[in-house]
Amino acid sequence: MQRYIEATDNALSVGLGAGDPNQSAMVARLSKVLQPQHVNQVFTGVGASRALLGQDDTIINGLVSPTGTVGMVNLATGPLSSQAPAAIVPIETAIALLKDIGGSSIKFFNMKGLDHIEEYKVVAKACAENDFYLEPTGGIDLENFQEIVQIAVDAGVKKIIPHVYSSIIDKTTGDTKVEDVKTLHAMMAETLK
Image (cartoon, rainbow, N blue to C red):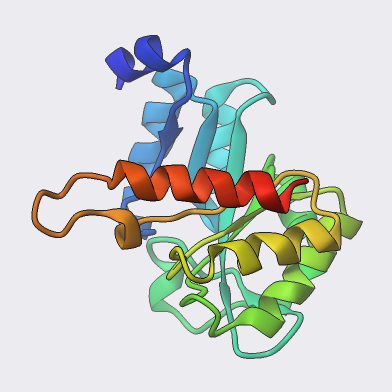
Protein backbone atom coordinates (compact mmCIF):
# COMPACT_ATOMS: atom_id res chain seq x y z
CA MET A 1 0.00 0.00 0.00
CA GLN A 2 2.87 2.36 0.74
CA ARG A 3 4.17 1.82 -2.80
CA TYR A 4 0.73 2.66 -4.23
CA ILE A 5 0.62 5.84 -2.14
CA GLU A 6 3.91 6.95 -3.62
CA ALA A 7 2.95 5.96 -7.18
CA THR A 8 -0.48 7.65 -7.10
CA ASP A 9 0.19 10.74 -4.98
CA ASN A 10 -1.83 9.13 -2.18
CA ALA A 11 -4.91 8.31 -4.28
CA LEU A 12 -5.51 5.41 -1.90
CA SER A 13 -8.73 4.06 -0.47
CA VAL A 14 -8.52 1.55 2.37
CA GLY A 15 -11.41 -0.90 2.08
CA LEU A 16 -13.27 -3.59 3.97
CA GLY A 17 -13.33 -6.23 1.25
CA ALA A 18 -16.96 -6.65 0.14
CA GLY A 19 -18.14 -4.73 3.20
CA ASP A 20 -16.80 -7.40 5.59
CA PRO A 21 -17.41 -5.98 9.09
CA ASN A 22 -14.70 -8.21 10.54
CA GLN A 23 -12.11 -6.07 8.73
CA SER A 24 -13.18 -2.87 10.52
CA ALA A 25 -10.41 -2.81 13.16
CA MET A 26 -7.75 -3.65 10.57
CA VAL A 27 -8.97 -0.80 8.33
CA ALA A 28 -8.72 1.62 11.26
CA ARG A 29 -5.17 0.50 12.12
CA LEU A 30 -4.01 0.67 8.49
CA SER A 31 -5.54 4.12 8.12
CA LYS A 32 -3.50 5.43 11.04
CA VAL A 33 -0.27 4.32 9.41
CA LEU A 34 -1.10 5.07 5.77
CA GLN A 35 -3.11 8.33 6.10
CA PRO A 36 -5.06 7.57 2.88
CA GLN A 37 -7.40 9.97 1.10
CA HIS A 38 -10.39 7.66 1.64
CA VAL A 39 -11.47 5.05 4.19
CA ASN A 40 -14.35 2.58 3.91
CA GLN A 41 -15.82 1.71 7.29
CA VAL A 42 -18.81 0.01 8.85
CA PHE A 43 -20.97 2.41 10.84
CA THR A 44 -19.47 1.41 14.18
CA GLY A 45 -15.88 1.77 12.97
CA VAL A 46 -16.02 5.40 11.85
CA GLY A 47 -15.13 6.97 15.21
CA ALA A 48 -12.12 4.72 15.74
CA SER A 49 -10.85 5.45 12.24
CA ARG A 50 -11.20 9.22 12.66
CA ALA A 51 -9.47 9.14 16.05
CA LEU A 52 -6.59 7.02 14.76
CA LEU A 53 -6.17 9.20 11.65
CA GLY A 54 -5.82 12.24 13.89
CA GLN A 55 -6.96 14.63 11.15
CA ASP A 56 -10.15 15.71 9.36
CA ASP A 57 -8.98 15.65 5.73
CA THR A 58 -9.44 11.94 4.95
CA ILE A 59 -12.92 11.05 3.72
CA ILE A 60 -14.42 8.29 5.89
CA ASN A 61 -17.66 6.66 4.85
CA GLY A 62 -20.02 4.92 7.23
CA LEU A 63 -21.80 1.87 5.85
CA VAL A 64 -25.57 1.82 6.28
CA SER A 65 -27.90 -0.66 4.63
CA PRO A 66 -31.27 -0.40 2.91
CA THR A 67 -34.22 -1.60 4.97
CA GLY A 68 -37.00 -1.88 2.41
CA THR A 69 -38.60 1.24 3.92
CA VAL A 70 -38.03 4.57 2.20
CA GLY A 71 -36.27 7.06 4.49
CA MET A 72 -35.02 4.44 6.95
CA VAL A 73 -31.57 2.79 7.06
CA ASN A 74 -29.96 0.05 9.11
CA LEU A 75 -26.94 1.08 11.18
CA ALA A 76 -26.17 -2.43 12.45
CA THR A 77 -23.27 -3.05 10.08
CA GLY A 78 -20.41 -3.71 12.54
CA PRO A 79 -18.77 -7.02 13.43
CA LEU A 80 -21.25 -7.81 16.22
CA SER A 81 -24.16 -5.54 15.33
CA SER A 82 -24.50 -7.06 11.85
CA GLN A 83 -25.35 -10.35 13.60
CA ALA A 84 -27.96 -8.68 15.86
CA PRO A 85 -31.45 -7.37 15.04
CA ALA A 86 -31.41 -4.35 12.73
CA ALA A 87 -30.91 -0.84 14.14
CA ILE A 88 -33.31 1.08 11.90
CA VAL A 89 -33.27 4.89 12.03
CA PRO A 90 -34.23 7.77 9.73
CA ILE A 91 -31.50 8.61 7.21
CA GLU A 92 -31.23 12.11 8.69
CA THR A 93 -30.41 10.60 12.10
CA ALA A 94 -27.78 8.32 10.54
CA ILE A 95 -26.13 11.35 8.91
CA ALA A 96 -26.17 13.31 12.19
CA LEU A 97 -24.65 10.36 14.07
CA LEU A 98 -21.93 9.96 11.44
CA LYS A 99 -21.12 13.66 11.66
CA ASP A 100 -20.90 13.30 15.45
CA ILE A 101 -18.27 10.56 15.16
CA GLY A 102 -16.22 12.06 12.34
CA GLY A 103 -17.77 10.55 9.23
CA SER A 104 -17.76 12.28 5.86
CA SER A 105 -20.21 10.24 3.80
CA ILE A 106 -22.92 7.60 3.67
CA LYS A 107 -21.92 4.33 2.05
CA PHE A 108 -25.30 2.94 0.96
CA PHE A 109 -24.76 -0.84 0.64
CA ASN A 110 -26.02 -3.20 -0.67
CA MET A 111 -28.07 -1.37 -3.27
CA LYS A 112 -28.30 -4.47 -5.46
CA GLY A 113 -28.22 -2.26 -8.51
CA LEU A 114 -31.58 -0.54 -8.86
CA ASP A 115 -33.48 -2.77 -6.39
CA HIS A 116 -33.52 -0.06 -3.69
CA ILE A 117 -33.74 2.95 -6.00
CA GLU A 118 -36.62 4.68 -4.18
CA GLU A 119 -34.74 4.40 -0.88
CA TYR A 120 -31.59 5.66 -2.59
CA LYS A 121 -33.38 8.76 -3.90
CA VAL A 122 -34.34 9.74 -0.35
CA VAL A 123 -30.80 9.01 0.90
CA ALA A 124 -29.40 11.27 -1.85
CA LYS A 125 -31.85 14.05 -0.94
CA ALA A 126 -30.92 13.80 2.75
CA CYS A 127 -27.19 13.88 1.95
CA ALA A 128 -27.67 17.02 -0.14
CA GLU A 129 -29.80 18.73 2.51
CA ASN A 130 -27.30 17.89 5.27
CA ASP A 131 -24.10 18.73 3.36
CA PHE A 132 -22.89 15.12 3.41
CA TYR A 133 -21.19 13.01 0.76
CA LEU A 134 -22.75 9.88 -0.77
CA GLU A 135 -21.21 6.58 -1.87
CA PRO A 136 -23.71 4.32 -3.65
CA THR A 137 -22.48 0.73 -3.53
CA GLY A 138 -23.52 -2.76 -4.59
CA GLY A 139 -24.55 -4.11 -7.96
CA ILE A 140 -23.47 -1.04 -9.91
CA ASP A 141 -22.56 -1.83 -13.51
CA LEU A 142 -22.25 -0.15 -16.91
CA GLU A 143 -26.03 -0.33 -17.43
CA ASN A 144 -27.17 1.37 -14.21
CA PHE A 145 -24.13 3.53 -13.34
CA GLN A 146 -25.26 6.73 -15.06
CA GLU A 147 -28.78 6.58 -13.60
CA ILE A 148 -27.43 6.05 -10.09
CA VAL A 149 -24.98 8.94 -10.38
CA GLN A 150 -27.58 11.20 -12.04
CA ILE A 151 -29.98 10.75 -9.10
CA ALA A 152 -27.33 12.01 -6.69
CA VAL A 153 -26.35 14.89 -8.99
CA ASP A 154 -29.99 15.93 -9.40
CA ALA A 155 -30.47 15.81 -5.62
CA GLY A 156 -27.56 18.23 -5.21
CA VAL A 157 -25.08 15.95 -3.43
CA LYS A 158 -21.76 17.80 -3.22
CA LYS A 159 -19.48 14.76 -3.59
CA ILE A 160 -20.50 11.40 -5.06
CA ILE A 161 -18.21 8.38 -4.90
CA PRO A 162 -19.87 5.44 -6.71
CA HIS A 163 -18.33 2.05 -6.00
CA VAL A 164 -18.06 -0.26 -9.00
CA TYR A 165 -16.61 -3.68 -8.25
CA SER A 166 -16.97 -7.08 -9.86
CA SER A 167 -18.99 -5.90 -12.86
CA ILE A 168 -15.81 -4.50 -14.43
CA ILE A 169 -13.49 -7.37 -13.50
CA ASP A 170 -12.44 -9.84 -16.16
CA LYS A 171 -13.61 -13.20 -14.76
CA THR A 172 -10.79 -15.06 -16.51
CA THR A 173 -7.81 -12.92 -15.52
CA GLY A 174 -9.11 -11.21 -12.37
CA ASP A 175 -7.92 -7.88 -13.80
CA THR A 176 -9.95 -4.69 -14.05
CA LYS A 177 -11.22 -4.05 -17.57
CA VAL A 178 -9.52 -0.79 -18.50
CA GLU A 179 -12.01 -0.06 -21.30
CA ASP A 180 -14.87 -0.33 -18.80
CA VAL A 181 -13.12 2.16 -16.51
CA LYS A 182 -12.78 4.55 -19.46
CA THR A 183 -16.48 4.09 -20.23
CA LEU A 184 -17.43 4.83 -16.61
CA HIS A 185 -15.20 7.91 -16.58
CA ALA A 186 -16.88 9.18 -19.75
CA MET A 187 -20.33 8.55 -18.23
CA MET A 188 -19.35 10.48 -15.12
CA ALA A 189 -18.09 13.40 -17.21
CA GLU A 190 -21.32 13.39 -19.22
CA THR A 191 -23.48 13.32 -16.08
CA LEU A 192 -21.58 16.20 -14.48
CA LYS A 193 -21.88 18.54 -17.49
